[in-house]
Amino acid sequence: MTVVTKNGTPLSTAYPVTPEFRTVGGTELAWRFSTREAEYKALREDAGLIDWGDARVIEVRGETVDFMQRLLTRDVEYLAGERCVCSLVLDEAGKVVDIVTVYGRDEGMLLESSPAGGDRLWAHLTAHADESVEIVDRSGDLTVVGLEGPNAWRIIGRLFGEETTAMPFESMADTSLNGTDVLLARTGVTGEYGYKLITGHAAAVEFWHIAAERATPIGMETVEAAMLEVRQPIMHREVSDEHGVVVLGLSWLVETAKETFVGREAMLAEFETPATIRTIGFAGESGGTVPASGTPVLADGHVVGSVVHAVDSSGLGAVLGLMRVDATLAAAGLPFTVGELDVETMSTPYILPKSWITPIS
Image 1 (cartoon, rainbow, N blue to C red):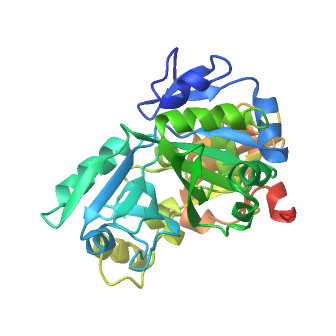
Image 2: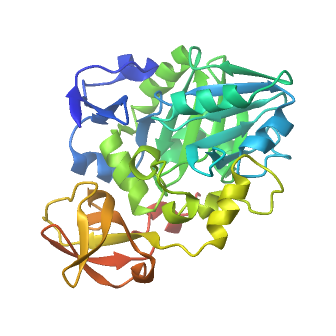
């Protein structure tokens, strides 16, 4: 990865310090604000602020339901203005275009791309659009801010009212911050209590300043590690045009009962064909070298697969990663060798987030 010195998101002016930036998936991301240990502790034990400003916000207007039903793998026919959902967008060959969050609105829908997937998603949507819909890039006036952690709900309740602390997962509320409209969604990617705000750039900066009095800015290094710990897919790390949803382990983002959507036939053909490789998690001893993507995976000295992505997991105190191996070996509890590491495959989730055992009260 290339270290860079600038970031173009609307929130960059609100950063308390100049973080380290890295180009990830062709997009500049705030990688680390302080130390990995401090940011991880804040996220898992308190609350962390996340700049999702690199995600593209796209509004679809017109005959929205029919159009989005055609393009999404999840059912959004009854996605009203109080719900959001995570979904895949596939191409005709059944390969993943992007992993998106879809926000229901009374008139139309909003789509939030993955941080590195905005251009690809935009091209796909516009290529499939007809006269019944209007597709508008709202990134010029809207941005996305994340707040996640066991105490994130306390900050949200203080700013937007106690009733917002009772929002169920994948619900939304239209609210305001000092007179500016805010779309507040109860969603997240780290396994902790999570929220996203979609609002104008100035209000996003204002929220960041206010929330930062209580929460800690978290860079993408920590966010991605936390996502992997709960097996939340990271688009630019895991997805390629080589594999479909079964091999990628993303079947849970597909509703096969849907009668039609782009890529469905190719995806069903993949479902019906016995997979020769599968994706599974692994962990190795603490202090070992984190293997790069593509590092061979060996069983009894024979190459049986390769590493997809790996991190140094603070939660496990070990190297944690994903590998794609021969399907007959994709089971938990098996030993492998990855580079200089002896590793063992694991079932998900790889850690138990504090929010899962800490009720909102």
